[in-house]
Structure formats: C-alpha cells, structure tokens
Amino acid sequence: MPLFPRSSFVAASLLGLILGAAAIGEGQAGEARSYVIAANDGYGLADCLGEGGECGRAVADAWCAANGRGAALAFGPARDASPAAKDAFVVTCGD
Image 1: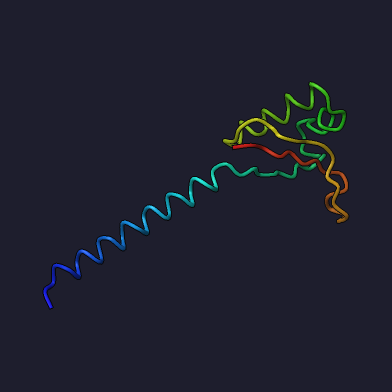
Image 2: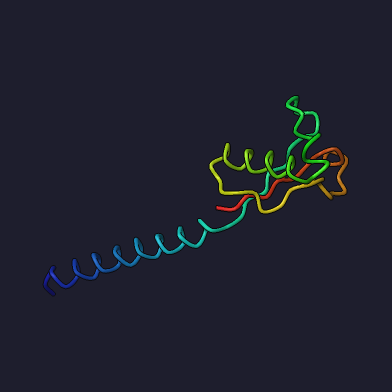
C-alpha cells in the first residue's frame, strides 16, 4: 500500500482535530464565570455589592474587567449554605 493515502488520512484527521478544538473553544468563550468575593477583602467591596444599585453595578463591572471578563451579569450576596460563604458576595461576569 502506498504511503501517500495514509499520510492524507493523518493530515485530514489532524485538521479535523484542530477544527473541532477551535469549535469547542468558541463555545466556551461565551460562558459566564462567577467569582466569590470575601466580604472582608479589605477594599470595601462589600459595602457596594451588599446594597446593589449603581454602586454595586460599578464595582461588579470593575471586578469583571480586572479579571479579563465582560460586564457583570449578576451580583449580590452568596446564597450558599456553607459557613465560609455566609459573608461573601458573588459576581457573575459575561465573556
């Protein structure tokens, strides 16, 4: 059997893997990511995130931008039952 058809198969397989990986990467790029922020972080973020409104929106957007994400989709107190999260806040950022 000639080597050429086999190398064509390998090349086509590699191309398929590369295109598949690119499609997966594009799908994941649009996912939201949530960050848990401790209330005692030392920056006073809890003051604005806790009251919501424009101050909370500005802080949440800035947090997302600082982490290389898009605008904040949601923010507020963590509603987790664990004791570690009782005084924490969650900021969910877009892509």
